[in-house]
Amino acid sequence: MLLLTKYLDKQQKQQKIFLVFKSNIPIKKSWGQNFLVDTNTIDKIINIINPNKKDNILEIGPGHGALTKQLLHSSNNLYAIEIDPLLCKNLKENFTSLNIINSDILKWDDDKIKYNKVVGNIPYNISSQIIFKFLTKKWDTMFLMVQKELANRIISNEGTKEYGRISVMVQNFCNVEYACDISKNVFHPKPKVDSGILKFKRINNSINIQKFSLFVKEAFKQRRKKLKNNLKNICDYKLIKEYAEKRPEEISPKTYLILFNKIYF
Image (cartoon, rainbow, N blue to C red; front, side, top):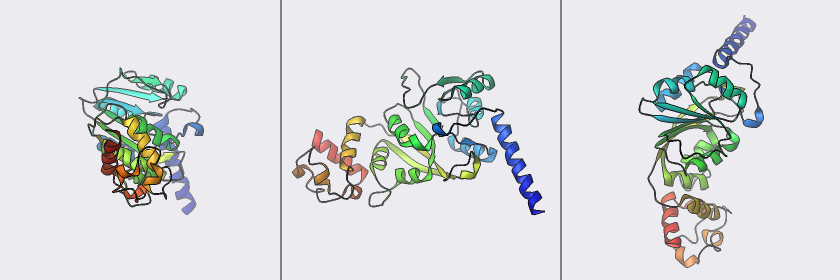
């Protein structure tokens, strides 16, 4: 009886995968492809995104279109960026009104496309790079599914082991919240770790992001060193004397912004 139950469970999972994919396109590990195959999870994510007819949405890595169908139905306009040409062909065949862009998201740069929401189940191996890239873009709200460990780093506070450069960057340019956990069991192929969905709400900030990013990177270049040592090539420690003896993980995101303004302006 137990063997029969396991067999039926396996059959149901395979059927679910087939219903979502409707394709024999090979999975490419080099592109970090892990596809959502659980309809309940898909519905849950759509409820979090809450798309409406006023939205112009950019979807990163639509894959087989697990989220795409509902996003397309609920939004004013949907652009989808997909690196896999075979998946692009499949998406064009299934969603004729979809604006599909066959490109590497890290190389793509088209400011002519206007969007207020960004959505993505993004590859673990380039998640940080994607987030840093989109901090420089114009949007209102962004929903990203990332490795749970990275999600916790992004929302972490100073004084914790998870806190780092990406925490400082994101929290100075976005209000960010952890929306929900996503189990590794709802993907095919199944990844080794669980994921989490983050909701980013853009903060209007006139600071030069690229310059601030380099400043924060320098501050964190050696976590166990004091700030006066890490920033010695940038400024006289007297400019930061109140924080000179602190380590980079002890300083809040807002304080980094204050120090940046003090040093450069």
